[in-house]
Every structure is written in C-alpha cells, then in structure tokens.
Image (cartoon, rainbow, N blue to C red; front, side):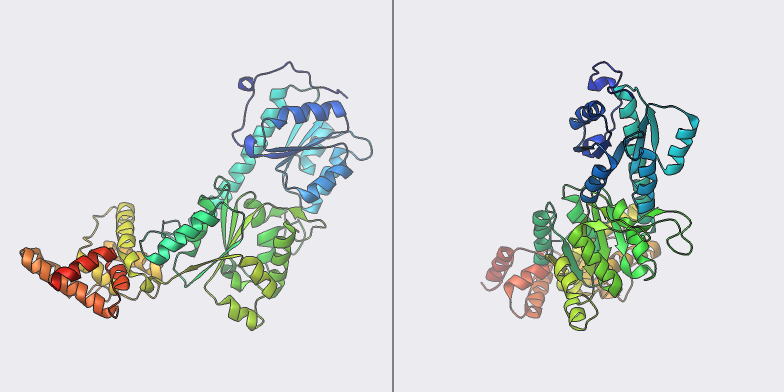
Amino acid sequence: MSTTADAPAETQADIAFSPHLAGASILVVDDEPGMRNFLVRMLASRCRHVAEAADVAAASKLLEATPFDLIILDNIMAGRTGLEWLEELRGSGFYRDVILITAFADLETAIKALRAGAADFVLKPFRSNQILNAIARCLDRGRLMRENFVLRRELKAIPGAAAPLMAGESLATRTVRAVIERVGPMPTTVLVTGESGTGKEVTARALHAVSPRAAKPFVPVNCAAIAPEIIESELFGHLKGAFTGAASSREGLFFYAQGGTLFLDEVGELPPAMQSKLLRVIEDKKVRPVGAEREIPVDVRLVAATNANLTAEVAAGRFRQDLYYRLNVVNLHLSPLRERPADVAPLARLFMAELSAQLGVAPLDLTDPVLAALARYPWPGNVRELRNVIERSLILGDFPRDVVPEDAEEEEDAPAGAGPEALGTVEKAHMLKVLAEAGGNRAEAARRLDVSRKTLDRKLKAWNG
C-alpha cells in the first residue's frame, strides 16, 4: 500500500473546494501513519475539526463521543477491513457518508463498497484534488438532501409560519425581542409558552437566526401531529427491518437538524415513554435509532414550545418533572394579542403588505378608525387569526363586520372633511376614552394608544389648561 499521496504541493486555488468544508468534522481511519498524517495535514486548515484513528476500535470510540460529518476509511487494515466495519456501522444506525480508500482496484471490491453504503471510492495513490473533490461531493450531496427535506417540511407548514410575527412595540414584545437577542447566541435549551397562534414557532426561528447555528438547518416538529407509535422513529430514525413496514433505513429529524436547531412544538403532547427517551437525549447528547444497537452523538440545539400549562401537567403526573426542568432552562412566554393591542397596527400593516403582494390584489386602507377597531377586537386566535382576517379581507375586498364594524369606516369619513378643530376634538375624545378604559393609568393608556408617555402627558396638560 502506498504510504503517501502521489501529488506535488498544490495551492488552494488549484483544488476543488466545497464551501461547506470549513464547517465539517471529519474522521480519518488508516493504519498507515504516513497516510493519516498527509490527510490530517491537508484537511486541518480547511475544515472545522479533523480526528484520526489507526484502527476501527479507536475509530469506534471516537464515534461514540463526536458527531462526524464524514469518515475517510482505508479498506485493508490489520485486524478488520474497512468494508467489514462499514457494514457494521450501517447496521448500527450510522448514516453519515463514508469515503473508502484502497490500493487494490477491482470491480468486486467497488461493488461491495457501494452495497455496504460507501458514498465514494478513491484509489491509492491519489492526488490532493481527487480526495478533496470526493469530500466536496459528499458534503454537498448531504447538504442538499437535508435542505430538500427541510424545504418539503416548510411547504407543508401553516401558511405564514415564517412571517416575522415579532413585529410590534408593546412592552411584552420588546421584552421578548431583548431575551432573544441575549439567549439566541447561547446553546441553552429554551421553552416557549403561550396560547395557540401567539407566534411560538416564529420565536424559535428568531432564536435560531441570531445563533451561531443560523447557517445550519432549522427543523420544526409538531409533536401533536405525529402518531405515538411512530414518533420515536420520526425523531431518531430507524434501521431496515426494525419494525413492520421499515423497508429501508432512515435518518430521523435529529440527524436532519445536525448542527442546527430542532424545534419541538406542542412538546406537552409527547407520550410518557417518549418523554423518558427525550430526557436521555438531552442529557447524553446521543440518539439511538429504532432497531440500532449503538447510540449516535448529535449536536442539536433544542427549542420546545407548548400552549399547555406544563406545571399543572407535571402535578397531574402527565409530564415528567425532570424533563420539564431540562426544557425550562430559559422560559419565553408570549402574551396573547388581546393583552398587547399596541402590536395590532404594525402586525396588520405587515400582513397587509405581505399578503396583498402574494395575492396580487391592491391593499385595503388601514385607516386610524379601522386600526382602532382591530385593536379593540379580542383576537381569540391571536396573531394567526389577525393574519387570517387580513387575508380574508383582501380576498373579499372588505373587512369582516364582526371585527371592523361599519361605523369604524364611517368614523373615518366624518373627520376626513373636518377642520383642525374637529380633528382635535376627535383625538381628545379618543385619548380620554382610552385613558378611562385604562383606569386612569397613563402608562397603560399610552401603551394602548401606541404613543409615548411624554406625548400623552403633554396632550392632557394642554386640555386641562
């Protein structure tokens, strides 16, 4: 076997370079020190992490501790061959790509390598650009598979799920944004709570977007939408033949989220057995595919969400207390929209612009009386309902009367032709009405009016002479 690559020194410009190599973690397994040194030296400056092993026993120990993106594996080694170990890896639930390298080129070995699950096959001696091209192909193919999978899930998601629902200037929304900016860059597990439709998935996406994982996948999972009998397979993957209907091996959602964020929505709906397994994954940072004999390390940031009262669920014995504490390291509570009317106007404008462009229709006028009517509506469906109302209004050409009464639009017509004194009267009446509804609390009235406290104080002083 050749101990060094048959290649002169090459500049980086001469080598096919995958843009994803810089973030990759690669394991080199070869019993020849010269080949290991060459590959490690070549890759060390090009990727995030490189590890080496002289035999499959040492390699197995490394795999138990570190989630590698790719393995470069020599075939003929003392003890067990690379092909034998590769077959064992695939049988134990390891799904990442493996490039097999060998000095003996024969068709039978190549066929066995492909059947065993090798992603590529490189002959010794090889030049640097040959192995780098093979690595680039594997990394790019893996990235495309994950992106396609995530995209298919996105297309099935609720329309508007990716909209920036964190728009708004209420104190509650500003507080949530501040926590996101602070916690997002950390690896901390976050539990997002709030009523249905308050924007829990968007909050999770915002946490992902400001984290170092932003370039990696964001994988949302609705735990309530997956049947209890298959949720373990969906999350952790399974091996061929692990259960009836498992015609082939399959990666789980934890693997698709590798390096990124896994969002577990409606986590309170997880069956008790799955709660126990999720707790172990959080503690050990490893998953065991269904039917596998070994655990696979994973590098995933977890964000969970629920509209249930998990404290009450724990007290009732329906949710594990230890899992609750593991998930609730940082709690982000989203207030219902009825408690933050100052957010209604900016959200309505945002949805009007977004949806009118999507539907190809002219936007409706969001006049002050219309916005005031929208702010008064209780929004039992929260932000999601507001978006649906705007969409329905655009389709039908008018606002629904149960949300925006006719007199709200007539109110706009009345002051439209009035002079400055009439407009001032309308403004005064509206501000005093809101102040009365707030029980005389000027800070709360200013919040509801979406004006500064200083502006409200100045107006009241002028009106009181």
